[in-house]
Amino acid sequence: MITVFGRYDVTNSTSGKPNTRLWSIINRDSSRVGPNFNLDTEKNMRLESQSIVDYAPMAEELCFCVPAKEGHVQMGENRNPELSFADIPEGTRSLVLLCVDPDVPTKPDDVNQEGRSVPASLPRCDFYHWVMVDIPPDTSGIEAGAASSGITAKGKREPAGPAGSRQGLNDYTNWFAGDADMGGDYLGYDGPCPPWNDEILHHYNFLLFATDLERCPVEGNFTGQDVLAAIEGHVLAAESLTGVYSLNPALRWK
Image (cartoon, rainbow, N blue to C red; front, side, top):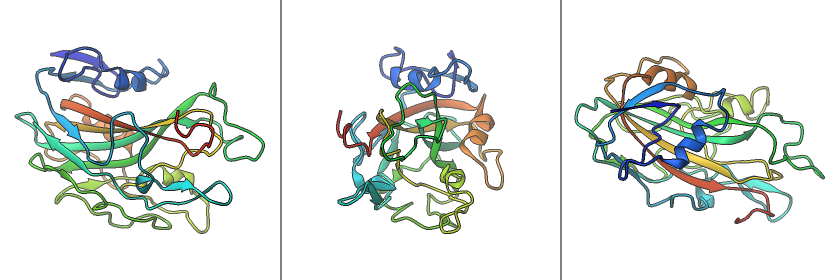
């Protein structure tokens, strides 16, 4: 067993060496240390996808916004990626799935402003795109487009998911707060829409946790932060898959 200080598993399940893509999320800012997870490195759980290649650009069909022929952006197909789960460890009572972008600007002053850019030096914070708990441990995965296909103004009311699962709020809830046309509770998956003038690529980390919880102790309109706090001390194994995306023409694709 190892003790991990941070939000996610920092051990590569196959080599036992530090998992740098997760470690970079955890330690972007030393003041943002999350729960302590005790993880067994012998539990080689797998999270795989036919929709996402690790650390490669995400397909536009998975995105909330895509480049426009005129202007900067337009609405995308917003389809959830295909994900498959394998080698779930013995003793798992439920799975948790999160998608989080840790590259979101902490200040909105320059976001999507003509003649300006969001500087790479700006401190960044997390933006949750998908929060799902109580996934049965015998679930083999989620089909492409099965949980999200298209954009629902004011948010999905009852997003589809594996039988018995529950889905929480993603951060478009906060982003669209106060918008007469789009404001509402955004449940389930809604894909990437980074600022079109951001100087950095955004990373979309799909995180799968095996837990010993039959029911995750969160209720109502719970968030990704609520889930991370709730599963502290209950994680048996974790795995990640990361896609990158940008709407900045200068970065497509660096």
